[in-house]
Length: 293
Ligand SMILES: [Zn+2]
Image (cartoon, rainbow, N blue to C red; front, side, top):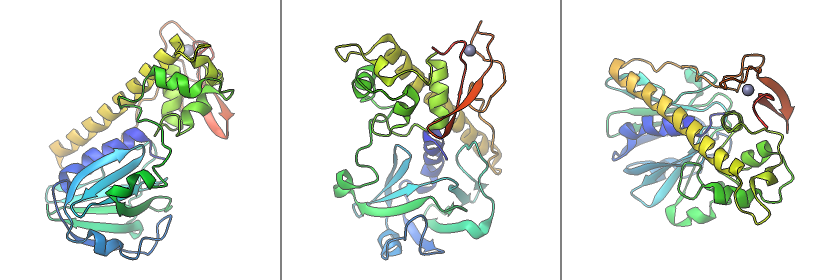
């Protein structure tokens, strides 16, 4: 499943094709993605200028001149392809390759920029939904989401408060979208490794008796911001590379420090341990017992 940095990279890649431009034509090649598309889906998009393309957690939010918002989610296997005068590319940087099979092109936007934006999703866990911007606080997909990990509302004080008294593991707490929005398995593993904190540690240890942030909470918030920031930077440079070559955007593998490195040497200076894997809450956790305490 694409995580926050991938979605942010997709947003950055779609922005030049969509933002400030009109959806001249919208085409749906089927009636449903994960959920049925709204009956007035095409009508509410056609002729509308995209005034802004934002992101909340792993949701893309296209603001339309009408006051509607088009919410888009990539699900497990969704991707966007941009076909423009200078070639075609798939913005984003994904751990798993995206589908090239055109039979899974489900939604197409012809933009007044001249670009064609195509949503492809073989497994159809992705979805799109239109709602009035004025009702965004009641939108079920967005309601209850915790703060953005790269936003100002997310800090050690907030994280400590959210974890105070929690007997669950640190890993489970960070995957809880009410605690912090948009973090998934990969970047939780990476952040815990970078903060030298065990994924098995109790979430409650981020807070002192007075619910104040411990040193662990400070380290962890710094690590979360750093791993996401680095991944977005890497994704952004993949977009720049594309613009230089005008070719199909390659799927380069991100160099993870812990994730998917079972049995390999830990990269912490002076650690000498090896990355291990175990299943935690049904997901693979990758970590180093030598330096993550
Ligand atoms: Zn280590």
